[in-house]
Amino acid sequence: MSAIPYSVLDLVPVPEGSLPAESFRRSRELAQHAERWGYQRYWLAEHHNMPGIASAATSVLIGHLAGATHTMRIGAGGIMLPNHAPLVIAEQFGTLASLYPDRIDLGLGRAPGTDQRTMRALRRLRSGEVDDFPADVRELMSYFGDEIGAVQAVPGQGLHLPIWLLGSSLYSAQLAAAMGLPFGFASHFAPALLLQALEIYRSQYRPSVRWPKPYAVVCINMIAADSEREARFQFTTVQQQFLRLHRGDAGKLPAPVVELGDEWSPRELMAMEQTLARSLGGDPDQVRHGLKALLAETRADELMFNGPIVEHQARLRSFEIAAELMQSL
Image (cartoon, rainbow, N blue to C red; front, side, top):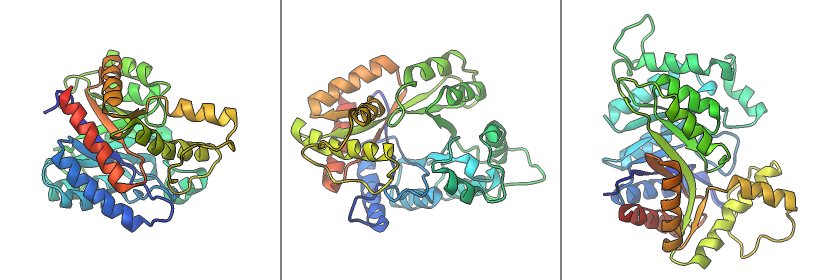
């Protein structure tokens, strides 16, 4: 077993020329392999109106994958709480925790996970203001507590479901510290504030009953292959993905290419490189070196890997290599 737990972040990517149903089958297979490879947890992230990400109905997919596995923790990384009434999330995850005891995690994010127009469509009659986030988190946590209020989450009450705060900003780190909750940093798409956020989280942490010490998870993109050449080829998928996102194109996951081409401006390439600055890619030796450096720099309590790879077997192999390397550190 690895001294440092390692986990999966699955955005349930939909490659070009494919459909979400196929992505669901692939996620199921990846989760089953990840369990055998020793992954600690398998998280799904809520996104909306993005043709390349099929994890919008996050709690439904968590149930699907929990039913296909046996011991690995399955959860949300995360639910974008401003999109939802806390009671609804408590009922959904109370149901999951009742079906799969001691296996469900609930990570919460403050961003909408989508564009402004879709955000309005999601929130309907709720204000959904991000300023409500701390109060919404506290309300949600109360539904899993022992005290019976006028409104109960059924199921949910008394289950004490593990709550995590997730983010890519200093605000999320400060709130997680103040509430005594574990914290996950999204350096797979926003690496700039990683070290500063971890420092704030640890220095300001207020111990809680469940979490007497801070616990920090660092999430990165991981593209590992048996050869450097293959890894570089597969890495062009996530490079193209973020180049397109910078142009406002949230389409399906692009196939890898031998070269990125000359249609991208120097400014776009620089923005993409900054976005992916914490990504690891390469052959096993290169990735091992990168993992050691990342752990030494961040002192992460757990690493989480996102694998934006189009070819299914290559994606499985990447997660397999990552597990082998983590076990050898």
